[in-house]
Image (cartoon, rainbow, N blue to C red; front, top):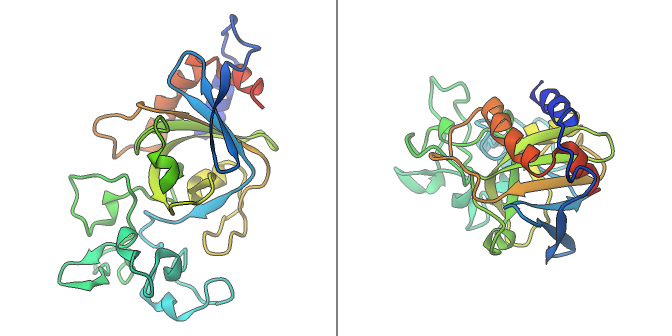
Length: 264
């Protein structure tokens, strides 16, 4: 597993000079979450115990038949999440989550055969592959397979927090599980920090995390390190393995896992 590879690599790093020092100082605050900026490098960290799982970008995230069901009490869902959580059909902001049908702009586009997920809407992410058509699910970052972090819209607007495509590293301080990640989505304006993809939630200890109900989400206290201005050109597409490779030197540069242990 990529996660285990990263953990072993960082644990065996031989950085001596500042190994026992955190290297991060008070910087700013978002809602009730304190942000700590690295003293010398373009990196910051924060802690949170709040976790929300985001299905956006998965080709089977939302299905039109599910609009008839209650989000948390309904049964027989086809999609990973409830269309109401994408703002459809009763909110005006659904086009920021679901791709519009250009032949009928009042409706979301529905995937056609021979697509594996024909009948599902196309769910967007803020990070995307501009070389692919807007109605192609492969244009977006698949929550099922890619560990990504969501930035609340107000947080994204703060100077220095970074951009879509930047990289980071997450640690569940309760169970020790870790994962590299990419910043791939802008969420609700005043949401809490800690929203993540299905893949990242799984890597941090979740068991079949359910974006609709929250069941199976990882529990504990989490530490997130973000590296602003670390994105590649182009920023997408990347594989999980490539994300992990990009994060390795960034973590080692700030002192490896030993330095992060001092930031708990």
